[in-house]
Image 1: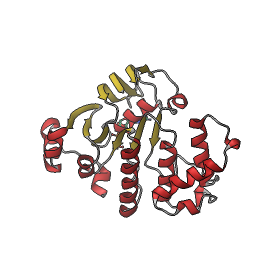
Image 2: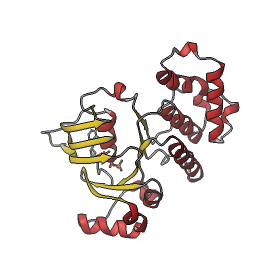
Image 3: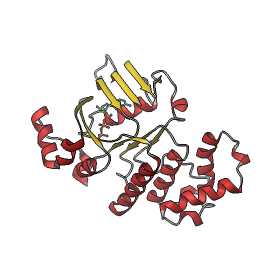
Length: 263
Ligand SMILES: Nc1ncnc2c1ncn2[C@@H]1O[C@H](COP(=O)(O)OP(=O)(O)OP(=O)(O)O)[C@@H](O)[C@H]1O
């Protein structure tokens, strides 16, 4: 359902700060794939997401989503099909609007109806969705999102990203800024939503154990390339130590990710 062919992206080309972030990268995702992505700092993981979501135009290559060439499509047009969750819980929601209004904004895009035409049925649907989070937010639908904790806000953003049933969900270390307990809870909510909706998902994480435990496939990136792509038995037998050893043998250096060290 997603195909990247020879995708390259260089920031500040021709200057002293030139950085090749994606290097002729190829990737194919099947519908329903849940791919976890690991790699050292600066490996190109977020740039890959930016390229798919349209935050950057790529220098060369082709990006296809469901057999449609989206390489030159503007980000706001891709947003109908691609949901993206960032690390920062402050991004993705409108703080001065209520939980209900934020969900309505995301929902009206899918329902193709006016924000002002939302009815009681829609409202009870939002309540139902919020109940599944098990955070008590269904009783706070009139609360401004700006008054929520980081974890609660990230959970609302997750609902906003998935309420319109996107074809692809991109999770960019979306639990990294949360305390460990909240991060665990949001990860559980995430995997429940993915299992229920079967949205094709890519999740960047610094937690290698989580990368091997969640989803059906793991990709390791370095220097703008995919250096390992495992699934099935090979993946289920892989340990964190073996993965780190693979990286150091392959790249002749240690895998360094500051968030991994902090965790
Ligand atoms: N907007 C930008 N402008 C200039 N350089 C950038 C930009 N975004 C990323 N880069 C550079 O591209 C390279 C890849 O960065 P990217 O953020 O994709 O890596 P990453 O794997 O997500 O790293 P991290 O785990 O540290 O978040 C890095 O060298 C980075 O400095």
